Image (cartoon, helix red, strand yellow):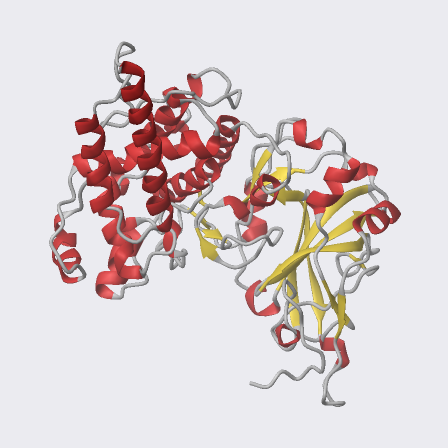
Length: 488
């Protein structure tokens, strides 16, 4: 299809063809929006993000005199959207809100493209954007605890999170892809109400814009905005004008419940999770039998949350860059086994038989402990405790995964606050989580190479695990050399 617009859209903007019958709602900076029949109250200040299914804007509530986020859903998706109903169930007290994005208002807007579901929420910055800011120091344990508290609240209110966005930097991104990952975990923005519109425009800088001009003069100009605009860089704005922003304890919010569903609904809606976050109970039927309607529930959120925690703590996607067939192979390797009905399928996709054993899984997790210490600048004790938590969550049988509430009682959360001081001489045991005796100052070469070899044999094509094992091998062999030299 030839693009009907004259000027080429630059990266990180929606496309002109997203506007039209059933498409996005045309918005321009300075517009004042509100429920039909009421005085408009939300003045658009800047764009925060976009997806195929919505645009999200920073706005000033002229009535409440506060800064808000306005999410406007594509007309074709608005009729079936349950997000407002779900967010209403997830409302908490203003004095002590839960770690879930809070709905402030909802209404519909009408354009020539159709009727658009509109949500007004507190503004947040995606966690993945926060973690990229220079000089940022975060307490991983606090982030993990808050995220699990938010998930527990969602589940206790009878909702499966399900619908999420892919790992992109769009604010409140609206791609309806399931499961929980860093772009779907946000952080409350401090002091934003103190910024006037002039402050935001002045300090945020003039956005790049691309005029929308059609080749066809008969194209309905009311169906698209006069221009497209880049999103505001909230992180840069906060870094420059909130001096202690990076030193504050982040307050987490779980975002984007556009594809969440009420637990009492049956059957569950289809799951469209990206491969790296797809729970095994969804992945296996899809890959082995091309069944994309396999039932799933809140336990799939636990699996996805574990993958997200690993990415937050370790800086890489646990099952990243895997082809669809290799995902199940990697899951079986990391979990130390697979259900009997996976056997035939796994044999059909492998050139050589593989033994998915607990020992091999222990080796992979031992490498992960090494990686967490190196990348996350954490202690050996902390890394082992986090890995134990992850292994409780990453269980192939969904019935054996603990609830989010139960996971909050995990010993990982009882450790002393992480001061980001790495263990200068971490020790690795073949069984993850079992520290070696304090008297063992030097790892024995036979034991070390044994688990490294096991890990290398089972690493498959996960880039994160390849890098993790390579770094772990270098770390351990380096320590062995130091220990050998010290004892000579």
